[in-house]
Image 1 (cartoon, rainbow, N blue to C red):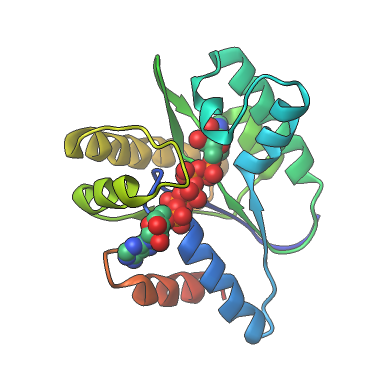
Image 2: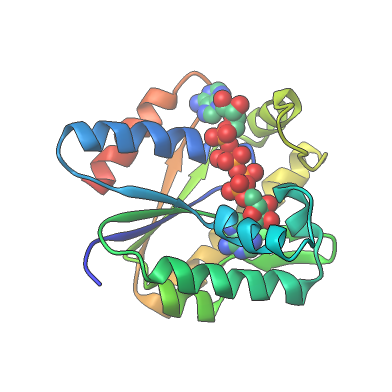
Length: 190
Ligand code: AP5
């Protein structure tokens, strides 16, 4: 397989998909094509066929083994995609029984990432974005819970770097500064 494999993560509502979409558009204009793959969509397509969830937000409430099986199927399918790809996913998923690693060893072995990017911002801004997003069923949690999740993501990303030799980059996406986050992302992906 050729091409660069970049994994982009961030807690729900941080705006990773907004940053990815605009970065890909800019890179396309520069003649640097990237395909964006949403890991959750691959999982959801299987889960829907099996009739085990009604919407994508229900997946993180499934029992741990079902989530791990869906993860494995998604990573195998994504590993077959050629070219420069961005994988839009989660460093960890908050389940009712604790954090589930989004990129456990068997997923990393399939994906072989060159780089993992963590999109982050202040937890109070994420809380506000979640509250104003009526299109999704977001977990209702406080500022400190969101901060703990972002902290856990940094810790688990370090272990992904140890396992794969990939680099890890943090990119901030603060309120009113989406443009700056996009510029930084484009620079890293170019
Ligand atoms: P997924 O669909 O990736 O869930 P998500 O994180 O909730 O995705 P979003 O794309 O909605 O979040 P986002 O923060 O990127 O939002 P957006 O750009 O819209 O995954 C779904 C499910 O799949 C997961 O829950 C999990 O169950 C499963 N899954 C996925 N990967 C997995 C894995 N590896 N292992 C196991 N399970 C996995 O932005 C949000 C809002 O912020 C928008 O309103 C936007 O306009 C606003 N905004 C963005 N940037 C700014 C800014 N700078 N200033 C102000 N507002 C901003």
